[in-house]
Amino acid sequence: METTIERSTEVLNDLIEINNDRVDGFTRASKDLGEGDADLKAVFDKFASDSRRNVQELSRAVGQAGGELETGNSVSGTLHRAWLDVKATFSGHDRKAILSECERGEDAIKKAYRDALSGDNGLSPDQVSLIVNQQQAINQGHDRIKALRDAQV
Image (cartoon, rainbow, N blue to C red):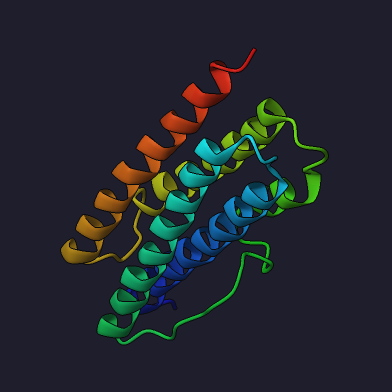
């Protein structure tokens, strides 16, 4: 039978993995942009940095709970791997296509955060608060990417 610490650690580790996917996705997207896309590069770099900070905070929460920290990306199959798919599908330097793929990745991380907060996840009140705060920033990031995509001709 799975303990509360094991359940909460699994939830936190899943969020760590998808945040790592997000860092990789935005880093790849930034590299695939052209010279005239400095505005998007700045946005992508900020979101990658935000997810690096999320990983640090989530890692601390795992340690404080006495759980075992996993690192890496979501290759275990437990998460939606949209950010990994995003990294694999960039072609050319089409802003709208890149933004569309980034939005798919943002949809996946939004779902991961929703899932983390639903059901019997074993999270402590402090862990829930941390995840809710990160979720708000993730939702704002998604909305920003969507608005940038919708603004493309």
